[in-house]
Length: 175
Length: 191
Image (cartoon, rainbow over all chains, first blue to last red; front, side, top):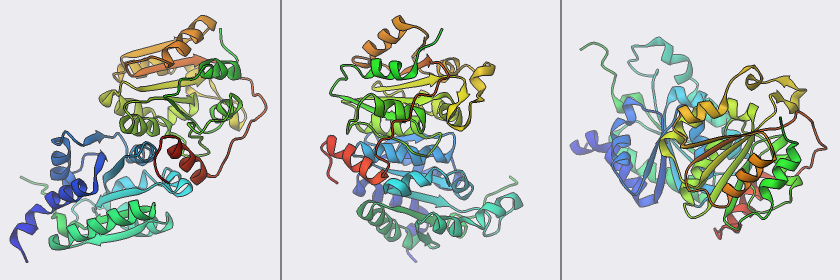
């Protein structure tokens, strides 16, 4: 495996956003997305929008598309649970919804409270009629992100790219 | 003192500027807006409770040369209170969030909302960073707000005190795809 790909997959996601013309990025702060959030915040051509809860981002993305801009929504697996009813907005109106979800509760998880939501992310997404892609290796992130962009904005549907906990690495609890 | 809701909406929409995009909340404010006259620049809502202000934020950021008015009810705004903090950071100069406050959940039988017991939405908006926060309780205040909708240049929040009556429903289009495509077409965006 390409060594640089192991560490720079968040930069590859950012590059994908740039190619796709993503202008608004809603996020709830998350360790797995920290680097991507930092890149988006530093980009004057993008608006990185801190949310108080992930469902705000679903409505934000709908508004962005109404106004002709592409957006992405960054969240952790727990945040998907906060979005379920709001995703009916995307389903009822066929809004493109590009979601990047970092996983907790599936691999070397220290915190058992992350497991109940982490364990139902994929079935919940499928019940919400989302297309689900999963990246487990650094070298597959960019290609899957490209596909997610095409499906979300080309087909006007909900697409979730799951970034597995194995990809992100385990959280350090004791220093 | 409080205002009749259909009169309040009609006053705000009277002589509507070409650049004004309107996002009503689900329920009564959508019926009020439809009653004031259908328009492709309305994005009617039949669900997604708590999301109206955030739809307005995404739209306002995407269309900086237009003005966006979110006009929703107190119950809908209460479900999305966090979005006031989120908008308070972004502060788009072309976004107005207007709450028709009657202190009750009118669509579900008139149960009291939190504003009836003192929750102060204008105070929350002010504390969240909205530069302009108004309380509208009479005709003079309503006329002032209607004027501001044509020329505001700072993020605006307003609570309009309305009576808790329930005028006959006026139902607009409810196909979400149709509402969305019509709205985007009015902005010159392709389907």
